[in-house]
Image (cartoon, rainbow, N blue to C red; front, side, top):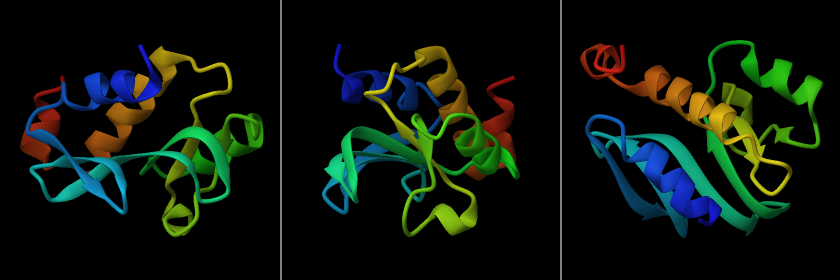
Length: 117
């Protein structure tokens, strides 16, 4: 299974999530309004498949400092704490699913986020 198929399976499993193209790439939304995961390939100075997700406070710096070969500060949204994840550098799919879950929780209404508990 390719990285987009894996990301799609993770993202679309969340309550009221959807997918549509935005900026030419698949993006995943809560209630068709708020992005919680952006997927891209060979774009924005990054080779290969990547995702960008909003992250809880402090997580971006922690991950980028610990593993800069896997994690990066994405352009445009990085200043807001989003994390970039390179999917072609030994992906840990359990960890990636957790990152996406945290991103969903960060932007989803409390009622939807509570459904994950």
